[in-house]
Amino acid sequence: MIHDFTKLNFLCEVTRIVRRAHTDIQVPEFNYYRTKRSLDPFKSYRDSGDVTSPYSYLTPIGITIIFIYVLKNIIRDVVAYIGPAKDVISDYNCSKIDLSCIPEGKTAVFEWQKLPVFVRHRTQEEIARESNVDLQLLRDPEKDSDRVTKPEWLVVVAMCTRLGEIPISNAGEYRGFYCPCCCDSHYDASGRIRKGRARFNLVVPPYRFQNEHTIVIGRSRAELNTDHLIWVNTKKQYKTDKPRWITDLMDPLRSN
Image (cartoon, rainbow, N blue to C red):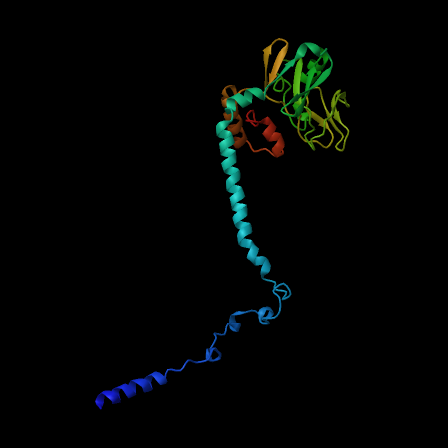
């Protein structure tokens, strides 16, 4: 009898297990966290006009920029490692010029490191005239002897020191160089500015005489280490208002 009663209670407990409908499940509400444009579930995201979409691209764009920058540095270091040494490159940056083909009183144009260079064979009259110029009359005072290695040969970069135009040789009021483009600048036979809107003399590149009839513009790194240190110390000691590109041209090791 007791056994039958226990069995009856068990059957009653089994019959009480009822499976609820899926409609009774309470779904969480996330509308509080959604923007007003995205509340409608039947509206396409592209049609919602969400203005925050561009910000989702900032992270991949930033990662891409950083990756490109790091990749550039890696490629540069690898190329520098497998490439020739800097002193070898500097030797290739030298330009040899034969002076025997330049008659007295004439100016020839050559190329050095993609820059035009004037080489002028000066006459004795020009040498005497430029040596006797009063420095107080010059806008950028500089002795003629400081601008030449040999008095009869003048070597300057053929770029006007105002905007970088190529002046005309054997022209101007001072029978040196003349820039008619926009500054109307006149240089003497020593490449010093005498009149016009330019403020500085023509730049003298680093050069040396290999023999009596040959000059070499530009020198190797081993030859110019001392000159470069002198240039750096001079630049730090004396403040200059010359444009950056002019001071860079004056650096003997600017191309290395």
